[in-house]
Amino acid sequence: MGDLSPHFSRSEFRCRCGCGADAVAPALVERLEEIRAILERPVLIRSGCRCPAHNRAVGGKSGSAHVADPARRQWCTAADLAVAGDAARWDVVLAAIRVGICRIGVAEGFVHVDIDRANSEDRLWLYPPRG
Ligand SMILES: [Zn+2]
Image (tube, rainbow, N blue to C red):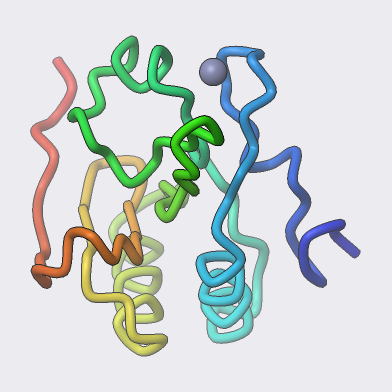
């Protein structure tokens, strides 16, 4: 039992820099629960909330849906879900589409899903392979 939902805890979404930023949008957690139910296995959050400084440090674009900035009443509306291998990547993308997520980024080791309402354009994009 998580402290946010049946399977997710706030700590899983906390900014990896140690700042404590963990304001994740409840609607995102709901979609992740639905994805987990479809997959019938745990969903590992590789990156959830980021403070503005950590977002810059990891090369996130400015205005990234990962940014949680309580000072600006900004909630994190994105999560990178860890995937290992082509089959797992396909499963996660398909589940994300089935639960209504319209912004999906695909990388070697993760799938980015976001429900960013300010960025309403539906998109599927690729991240360049890491050197
Ligand atoms: Zn941080």
